[in-house]
Amino acid sequence: MNTLVIFLAFFMTSFSNNVPEEKILFDGVSLDNWQVLDYRGHGEVSVADSCIIIGKGELISGIRWTGDFPKTGYEVTLSAKRVDGNDFFCGLTFPVRDSFLTLVLGGWRGALSGLSCIDGYDAANNHTGIVYGFGTGWWYDVRLRVTENKVEAWVADEKLVDFTIGKSRLSLRSEVESSVPFGITTYKTSGAVKNIRFKMISE
Image 1 (cartoon, rainbow, N blue to C red):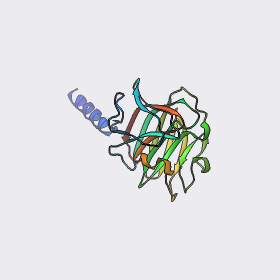
Image 2: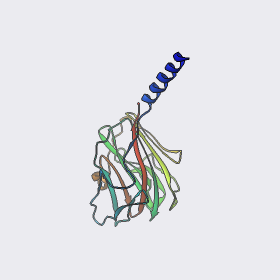
Image 3: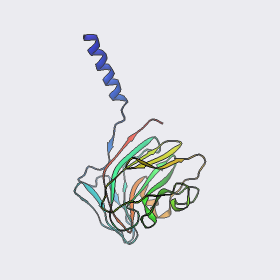
């Protein structure tokens, strides 16, 4: 019996050591380690009800993470919702290798999602663009996975992006370059985000 107990204890310890540890990027209370981006005419950014509220601006409003962030081999999860407006309520800018991309959710008057930019083309004009009907006032669980070879994204367990990087040239629209290494933006829209976490993953 003692041998079995020891074996089980060793097995559980080994298993727990192999489970990636999640890092909480937003504590639900403060904007610690987040910077409000100083876009001209940007909306107010505040914390309420354990959410970050990014208010509607003249054009873009947003925040950026000021701490360290990996370039590859990671997964980000969060919940996001459109509070008001009809354009993108969650634009996630993130590192990919030595470049960056933005996952746009509900852009181009609320009808399109995808990655910007691939070979110079934004989500409306490259093969990652997909129509997805986001409502207003509904929370959506978002998962972004970045490895050396692929970028994948899910919304409510539905896979929206399955992009093999290959030799594609990756870049950002100039409007969101200030949100690197990891940022969240909106366009003429109020959005809310919560439960922002990331973890390292094996390739």
